[in-house]
Amino acid sequence: MGSWKTKYKVGDLADEQRIEMICKKCSRLVYITKATICTARGREQLYLDEIENRARCKAQGCRGRMRMAMDRQDEMSGFVGGLA
Image 1: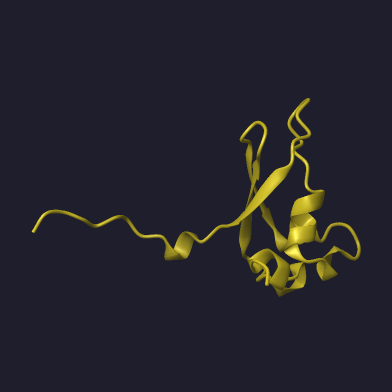
Image 2: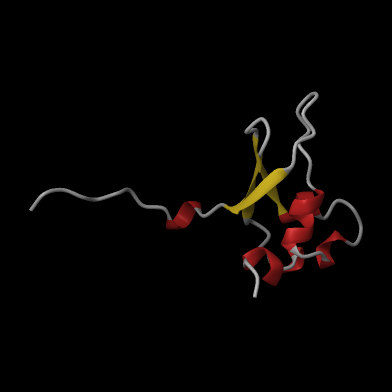
């Protein structure tokens, strides 16, 4: 059994869905979309973990591995807490 990255293909993403790519080496943050991933032919059939394994940071001199995370802006809410 795997994570969500092994279950979904690039083609399963919604057109407006953004994915966070964070460099493990320099902490550079980049947002990508389905259209960005599909610029090369045949990538629509790849699983998201395969995209993550191939991704490298494009910052000058870095070339670090990237970590993928799902961006869910519509589901975020502020922390509500306090003493009763």
